[in-house]
Image (cartoon, rainbow, N blue to C red; front, top):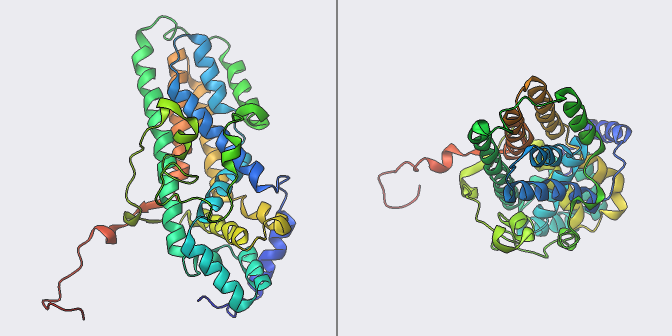
Length: 342
C-alpha cells in the first residue's frame, strides 16, 4: 500500500496553488458529465444524418462547433471519474487505504496529488477501465470523422457543395461564438439524463459494454438500430501515455473521492481536479484548427472536410491520446530453457 509518509511541502504548495487557481464555476460532477454527454449525443446525430444541401451542412457545422472547450474537458474527466469508480478492486483499495491511514488523510492525499489514487491497490484495474473507455469513445468519434471527410470528397460533384460558400467570415464568427457559449441546456435528450447518474460500483462496464463507461454506452443511450459495436484494442495491450497520464490521474482521484462519499463535501477539490489543463489545451487547439480551416475554405464541401478533421477527428484524438500501445504486451516472454519458473 502506498505510504502517506512520502509527502513533502511540495504537496502543500500544490494544494494552496490549486485552490487559488480553481476558478471553475461548475463544481457539480453531474452537470459536468452532461457537457460530455452533449458532445457524444451530437456525434450520434452527425452519424445518423447526411448533409444533402447547404442548410443541413450548416446545421452539422453548428452542432459540432457548439461545445465549450472548458465544459467539454471537465465533462470528459468527470465521465472518466465515474467510470473508474465502477472498478471493484480500485474502490476496495481506496477504502482499505482509508481504513489504514484514515479517511481524511486519503481525501487530502488525492486532493493535493492526483497521481496518488492510481498508485493504490486496484489502480491498475481502474486504469484498464479508463483506457478502454477512452479508446472506444475516441474510435467512435473518429469513425464519424472518417464519414464526413469521405463525404467532403463525394459531394464535390454536387452543385450546392462545389459552390463558393457565401459569407464565410460570418460563418466562422458564428461557430466561434457557439464554442464560447457552449451547448444549450436541451442538447442532451431527457431520456438520456437519468443514465448519467451512477453511484460507485453500481454498473459493470468491464463485462457489460452498454453500461456507463462501457465501449458501447453512448450508442446504447441512443437506442434503436443505432447501437453498434465499436472495435476496441484489448485493454491489456494499452498503457497510459505518460504525456497525458495526468488526465487518468485526475479521473482516478475524483473516483477515489466518490468511493469515500466525499464528492459533496469536496466540491472545490472536484472542480479543480476535473479541469485538466493538457486536455483543455488539446481541445482548444482542435477548435482553433477548425476555425483556421474554415477561414481558408472557399467552397462548401471544404467546410465538411473541416468539420470532420478538426471538429471530430482532432477531438477524438485528444481523448484517445491518454493511452498508447503497450509493446511489452505484444512481446513474447523469453524462455529460460527450463520447464519451471525462475
